[in-house]
Amino acid sequence: MKLVCEEASLLTARMKSFRLMPVSDTDIMADNALPGEYFVFNFDNGDNNSLQRCYTLVSAEQGKFYEFIIEDRGAGSASNVISRLLQQRKEVNISGRGGNITFNTIKNKKNVLLIAGGVGITLPMALIRECFKSYGYSAPGVFVQLILSCHDLGSVPCLNELLDLHTQCGWFSMRIHVTRVRLDKSSDFVRAGRIDLSIDEIKGVPESAIVCGGADFAQSMVTAVSTRFPQALIAVEAFSSGRSLDHIVESDTHKKEITLKSMGKVISVDSGLTVLDNLISHNVSIRNMCRSGICGSCKFRLHSGEVRSEPDFCLSAKDKSEKIHLACCSFPSENAVIDII
Ligand code: FES
Image 1 (tube, rainbow, N blue to C red):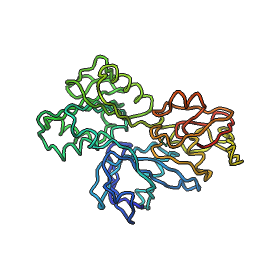
Image 2: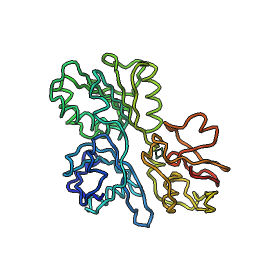
Image 3: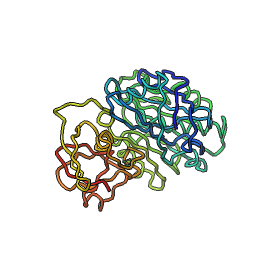
Image 4: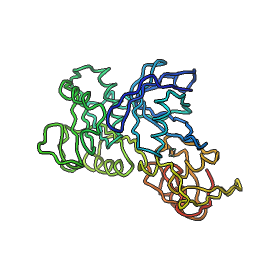
């Protein structure tokens, strides 16, 4: 399916909302695209490097528009390329969708805890908007609380909208933890310092917790939630560290080689890119969906050499003992011999 940008609006210094319209029919979005799902954007960085990135659908009107929030990580990053292409009204190809955290995940839950770090706010934002569509201002017996960690208030997209909901909806409250600026005053919705779930106040006992953010943040929050609320069902959307995942500038000093054993193919790779991005840029076919270490579709076996792997959410101890890695969470650190599984 191809989408083109109908409207772009600046939300923060680095984040923009893109309202996209379909320009061709396809099955990918025809079948009820649900806010909270992620969509696989395929685009070219201008040097014939094809890139794929996943972005969360924040809101939609079926067949009419699809809204995504994208953080531009600056020159040389994939997010900078896609932001530019969208603003130039270039058509962007969507090749797949995934993710299963939507309003359906939380709609029958009485107490829901949403925890987000930085740009991880996009999925909670999608869920909160869907809650508002369904509940309006009042939903007796339902409580949704958002805890967001960010550098400063200026980096929070849709802050006014969240504040409106916080002050007007009985079912919603939020607290923002600001980590990089000093605050002279705290209020009921903003605090200085990191989230500490061992002591931070949480209303009631959450039945369901949804954690969204970078892999390290997500892993620490999952541990903290499961320690404090062992009965809570936890769902996670995590992504690899932005710089490594998003950086597409090549440097000769980064060059390594990956040998694809059963294909008999050797490719020159960049250690600043994931194994997945390296394989895709050499037109090596490899299944992938979430690009966040969740779906497990991009497994490969490391026969020799080394890769640097970031935390993931799906490999078992057995997988790891058998030297199975995820291409979306691994970076070439030495020459390596692998096979895609
Ligand atoms: S693409 Fe989903 S785990 Fe790698």
